[in-house]
Structures are given as C-alpha cells and as structure tokens.
Length: 479
Picture 1 (cartoon, rainbow, N blue to C red):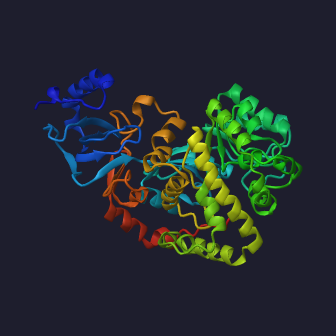
Picture 2 (picture 1 turned 90 degrees about the vertical axis):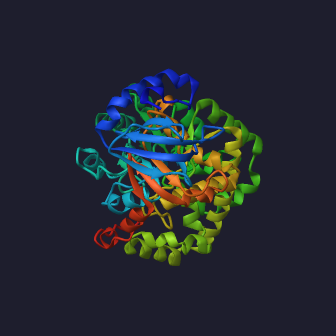
Picture 3 (picture 1 turned 135 degrees about the vertical axis):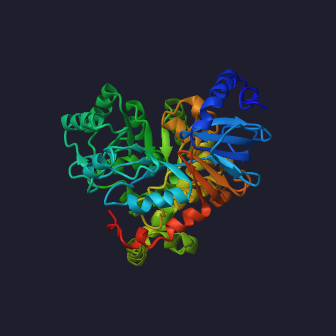
C-alpha cells in the first residue's frame, strides 16, 4: 500500500484532514527520526471501543494512526513491537510542588519512570519558579508544566513561599504580577480576607488569568464559584459546606490553615451531621459552574494512615532520597494519636465524598501534592490516587480519564488533539497489562514515550538506581 493509499480510521470527521496529512507525510516522514509502535492496543479513555493500531510519532506529535498491517514507507525509524502492549496517553499529576529547593532533580526521573509526562505545579518560591521558567532554567527533557503562581495568602502567609495580599489593592497587584510573569494561573490560599479574595478574582477576570487553589477559610465554595475560581484543591471547605454550622467555626479561625482544621477533632465529631441534600445541591452548582476539583486523597492517606504498612512500608519509598525517608520516619514517630484519629475519620469521609461528586458529574482531576509530603512518592503516588478513585466508585477507565483526557481539557488543549489522535502530543505510556481490567495495571509500564522519545522500562529503572540522583541532591525539610 502506498503512502497516498493509507487508511485513516480513527474518526470519520477527521478523514479528510488525516488523508491530507498522510499525503504530506509521504515526503516528510523520511527526513527525520520517526518512532513507530506497531500493532498496539489503544486505550483512549474517551473511546468506548479500542482497536489494535500502528502509531507513527514524529516531531513530538502523533503523526499517523494506521491499520496494523499497513506498509509504511519510512526510513530511519525506530520501531517498538506493541503486539502484547497497551497504549494510553501520558499521565498528568494535577497537583505537585516540584520546582523549589532543587526538587526537580529527583522528582523528574520519578515522574518519567511512572509515566507522568505533564504536571500542574501548584506553587513554588517566586525566585525558583521564575528561574525554572526562564530558557534553560530546567531540564528540557522534563515533563510539560502548567505553572501556578506562588500562593497568594493573607498576612502572614501559611507557607514560607506564600505572598501576602493583606489588602484588596495588594491582591490586585499580585494578580497583575502573575500575569506579567507568564504564570498559567493564580494560586489562592487559606488566610485571604474576603475583600482581598474578591479583588483577586475580579482582577484575574480583567487580566484573563485563571484563579485556582484553596478556598480561603473566611470564604466558601459558593463564593469561589460565584467569583469564577477555575479549580479547587484538596476539596477545601467542601465537606464543611455539607455540615450545618461547620463553616461558622472555620470562618472564626482566621489564623488557622486548612490542614490543621482536619485534625483538631471538630470536623470529625461533626461528620454525623452530614446533610446529603445540602451537598447534592452544592455538587449541582459545581457541575453548572464547570469547577474542577483536585481531591489529593493520597496526600491525606499519607498524613494519617500511619498504621497501614502498605502506606508506610511501600517499596516505592526507597525511591526517594534518604533525607526525605528520614523526615517521613520522624513524622510518623512524632505524630499525635488524637490528630491521626480525627484525620483518618475525615479522610474516610472525603473518600466517600469523591464517589458522590463523581456520580453527580462534578469534574475531577488526579493530583497528589507531591513535594516532600509524608509517604507521597512523586510519580508512584499518582497511580495510588487513581486506585483510590476506583475505590471511591469510579471504573478504571473513568479514573484514567481524570489523569489523561480530562486533564487535557482542564489545561485547555484543543479538543481534536486530546487523547490518542493524530496531532496529539506524543506522550504515551505502553503497558504490559490492560488498565481497563484493573487500575493497578497502570503500573505495568514497559515504555514511556515523552515528546516522541521512547524510554524502556530497563532504562527508566537504571536512572532510578543511579546513586547521583539520591545521594548528591539531598532535598530540604518538610514545609
């Protein structure tokens, strides 16, 4: 079969475009190194059915999708036999802190090894973020990043890398700075006053930049939706909104932070007052507003499930630097029993809450809060988050969507370039087992293709075993 006779079978609506692309590719594909993955089963979470196909990757995109038996006139091509493999889009971790204090030096190899080809960095030190975003400021082979500003917070900020917006005017100026410096979204945090928060939301609309992050503790998810907040991290104040009276004491604790509110016992004691009808109404408003939620269940699990050996003694822990392992051991030893009990009760309810939100049609993304959070291993933790989504009530394919095609929609990708389609980014994970049958099969990684460059399981494993990755780049203490 000649190049001009190739069959384009992915979508009838794309037939003409793909045929033209194929005709042009007859000339161009031979000019540069091309990766061909033959006879691989496609696992596109947006597709109800899958088929074995041959993928042609070039210049960082999927250049063609052919029938398995197609004869391709391509020279200088690298080939992978996909006969026993399953291809899914590269994964996105929608909540990390990977770019301060040199963390990317040990985060990046872990992300690649676990098929995470895209990140949403939810806040860093301003200097670190600006330096990383400059040309040559970070490893160009690293994942694609959607950049959040440093957290805009009240005074004093909860986090060391937060920026204080103590007035409405200060909040507006920080939004303008975030836009000017090219951040993709403004990150908002716990201690913002209602006045500063409203000013940030308003100025962001004028500047054309998204607002994402926590719901400030003096405000509410309704305020976030009304003001147009694009995404909410950690389900901040969502559970509290479903319990009569809970928002009253969160509003009263102006110096608190959202994590501490989960462990002081009041929320755990109030769980029996959970109002299903109130929460259902809230979920419908999330659906109508199109608000994204990043629950980060795995972060709560790591913080509170310290008597679970699958969490604290996981083989994945050996993949992080020894200094981090020691910090986690210290955290486990020093954790207070009453706070852990309260936190575990809230975590268990949050898990059920995610299932309720999913069934209501709320838009969910998979994120982990990977930084040096206790027992959250960058890359590996995203697979744990997907497993928790399945435990909450999703099918494996629905869980996969939160880290692949829905993640691309959240990021604003062109609809025709989402999933395994011609023109989509050549970020693909090849698995040796079908993740649709068991979400744990997302860990059966045989190859990771990032920007069209293929990395075998053996190569990725060797990188993780490199002494320089762990010993020469010791990360700092927990935030």
